[in-house]
Image 1: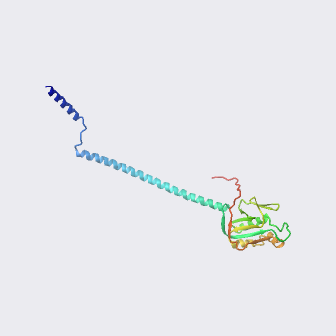
Image 2: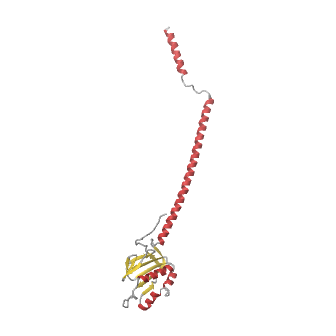
Length: 232
């Protein structure tokens, strides 16, 4: 009797145990539907990723074009700066041109008309610039000074100061530009009458040096004072 009761209780327990398990998928249609849903989900995700990738590629292309524009703008800016530096005389320059010697009288008694003055160099420099000179420098005692918009050519008693640097004769004036045009300008005895009158009357030395056609001119190296400048 006890065995019968035990067997009955065991049967009920096992029946309840198996009935609580998750049922197995035994219908093929249910599996196909689940796979179809998974496929649809994956396709939607794939489409979303493709759209995001396309947006990212478009953004990258826009950034690349913007970068190219900035690079081109930067290149233009660098080119403009280099041009301005050349115009301001802040770079060394070499090219076709002439070299002129201006010196005191060597054989006669020194007097105000037989020595080279700062005013003579100012006249020559202005005349050269007016006749196409692109760059000019003045050298004396192996000291060469670039003549620019900032340059001052002055004298204190018998001392000539160019850009604040003491220069002594003989003075070598170098000018870059069309050689024929500059030569014609220097030989113009009407435009440079005060100098040529003293060349003829006092023996002042003033002439173009033969064989000096490839001219090299130093850059401006003296302090630059800038007033009322604004950044935009």
